[in-house]
Image: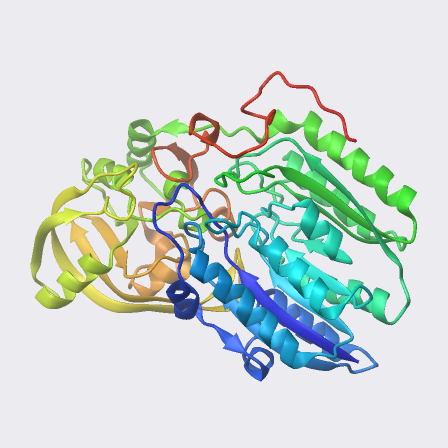
Length: 497
């Protein structure tokens, strides 16, 4: 047996004014052919696939296609979309004949002129390999699953957790589903239900035993424990995606039993709809949030600046929280991040120990933020390279480029040249800090940061601030989404089709 493996991963935020280009994918790390098998065997979904396939008694031959990852950001340019599709399809053309295709996707990659890039890719893959070759794909829990994606795949395997701490395991689950189809002769039938609702990410914490998200995770895992069910997933979609088929979705894939799949799918979709208001977060106004953080004398306070969350595709250089931090005399370091290659270049030119006086931030996100004049000491220059584990990652190499630390009193601004996980403890450690010893830490993430900090933080406060990835997204202008859609249409009624 020959099994082809590839990856296309990027989450799009259509409110981000910065377009995603080929350069962002190449900076993250494009891999081709056998390099995928050599360098990703312990990393994320692809690693889970590789490890599982290598454990099969049948020992299939693995064929690496191409790995195309980029950090969440704005829509991909048309040239970039064409390049992405060409890379994957040309790799597959060189690999055929194959007995199966396994793809690790995000599911919310949108381009200018193509709002459903993964759907276009999967449709092209299906045309290339024909109707009878098993095609299985993994998806992020925040994927926007379209009917086109469902119709051309044999099975979709969705993360069960947010924070996303099961990426490797999702790859293992996908390989197990493929084995059921390829070796055991399972006949996959998919039940698919769009739920006309879009949910804030802040309360989608599947690790919190008191949350509705945790209960849905348990239901999905109980379904998958049934030998008649190949896989079950709930995708609550990422909200900052102005596309025609926006909405949450439930997918249940059964072995030959369509009625069973549809019944389970309808039950779960109905339950999700009935609990939609449980996802609405409690937000603290920015000024009050920082004031509360300052008056916590002991321990670490984490401020979630979800509106500028780089994990949600925001630009990462909002200055709103920084403005408030600078108003206080913090007893211990107050850690905040910015993305600014220009600011890093200035720091490198002046050198450690010099004083830098200039406006910072508000350049990449010129829609919702403005530059903030600061006078700061340059205290460190470093390369933001590390291996990330936890939310979004298992053994995932990250390179955010040349970076600098600026200090104004106890406020420490970690400035990176490139976007990335601007919540990760590994980033702050690379910058020379113990993040758990800080007085306050700003995590540019709506939920995933909890995997790293919830066990240690004295308090976690979710901030209401302007930005490209706000919690109250329904107050922004969307031009392409389907209507009616909750929470835009609060009074709408719905039942599964």
